[in-house]
Length: 337
Figure (cartoon, rainbow, N blue to C red):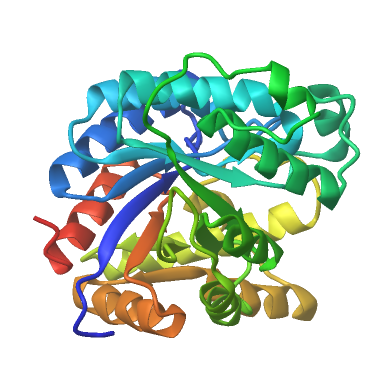
């Protein structure tokens, strides 16, 4: 595996830096997409989050349309559409329209979590029961909508997703636990494991996906990537400060309070309890940091461990230029161009 060329991609949550605005965050997403397209990244996914002031990415289907028009080579997609929030027919129509506009360049990454708290999720979709069976039914219906097929006697026999186009977006299921990997294997879809959410059990879940994969009309062989937080810099002090901010951000999230944007000066004098220090040690497995030579070794090891040839880098920094530089250094280390 270490001799196989590793492809790099981007997962972008449109983070709102401290002192910046949501409009700036969206503009930075656009600039980053154009920049990483030039650097040779494989795909660029944008996320769906709701009711949080620290992330601007709430409507990936809207953002994808603009990003695909601003880029030339990369695949553009969702990481992901949170299916319980949406009508399956509307998802199918959104992504058929994207395929009509940018045939062969669109990825539909899907998740079964709401991407928000339960109250907000209930407002986004008042009929959402958070049932696994509902999610499986959505996946089956989605295939029917994309291929204009249906089970006799079902409501799909009377409905077509418009516009009816010849191409189908690449379909991926996102997971931090592995269950969706089994669904992806059953339906013949791609599988993306969220190491940046859960650093435990990923390689085993990827192995199960590959073993149980059933070819579909859209995908003949298993397709897998792993997403992780990454930060690369030639400045070791910046690496140290970045890790400290990430440590605090994870604790902030786990405590269940409001997630606010912070910088190093806000937390540099923080002290942590023994329990918090234990959580910090665990969460550090979710983040890969280092100088250029260090980062290549670490990411190559991660790819070997998961037995994948594609890594999706999630990078959030206090300074946008540091974010651009991190992706540039990664591209150089892995000879993307």
